[in-house]
Image 1: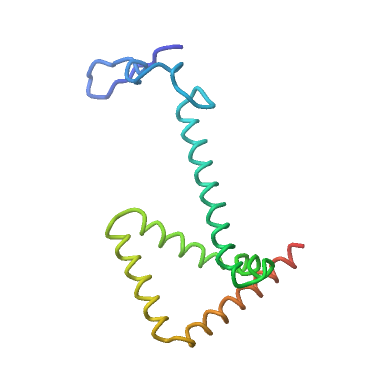
Image 2: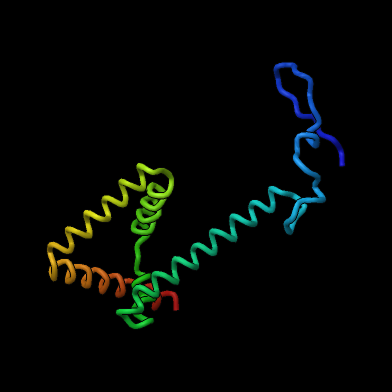
Length: 144
């Protein structure tokens, strides 16, 4: 392995890059000897696992009230805008404590508002999910 030089433009003496790495490459555990590749593999695996877990939780929540076919149609009927909005809100909530407080407070306020409206909120939610399921069934019929 050739030793590359790590230097800067200020004219400081360059140091071998290999000397900057802690431990030896032979001691690194992972599928690839390249730690950057292992980081990419771990990132993809974690994101994929997270996505699968999220879908399982969503189906479980919907499956307790709807048939599996309708639950799948509801999930497929989400628009790109809804998906992006949910992703952005989740990012805000997970990146900082103030973001978590803001998003958590907003969700709490929405829940309390819905509870104060009682059956009207329930009917609105049922209508929205029914329309979303119809959109998902249309998309499924177009693809199939």
